[in-house]
Amino acid sequence: MSPSLKGDINLLIEWTQTYHYREGDLLIISKPTLPFMIAHRACSHRAGERGQEILQIADDFIFGDEISVSWIELKDIVGRVIEIRYGQEEQVATLESMIVQGLGSWIAKLSLQRFINLQNRIDGQKKINWFFVRLTTIQHRFACYMFRIVLYINSIWHLKTSKTILA
Image (tube, rainbow, N blue to C red; front, top):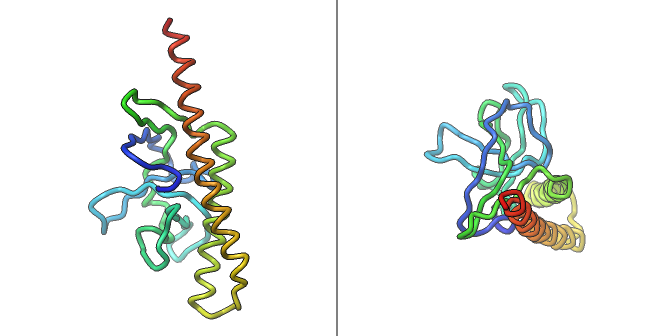
């Protein structure tokens, strides 16, 4: 999930019903064709051939790579990430705060816009304004790094409050 998340991290997952997610949430996806689970951002939804589908997009996706960006069926979603633990002190950052959710939603919208721009370019459907493509990419990177900074601040605040409670 780089650039939003980087390094050795542990994810605390809420194993939940498939309809319990928000745009921008980090979903845990299990596909029968993959020997591992993936955690990617929920960016959109649609009614598919087999029911509702979710567009999952990695923050640094590769267009055409089914793992980093694809429509998935609801049955393939097994949960969502609610906390991230990282660092030697096992710092905890929650994804449930309104600021983190807002940034996640913004990243999801920007990821969707980047995906649509690339799809239109490859399909040749529309003439692409490269200025807006680059602007969207810069905004996306900025939002991802802000997400990382807010998680770090969130983890420091969580660490201080937990030490205060324990004392």
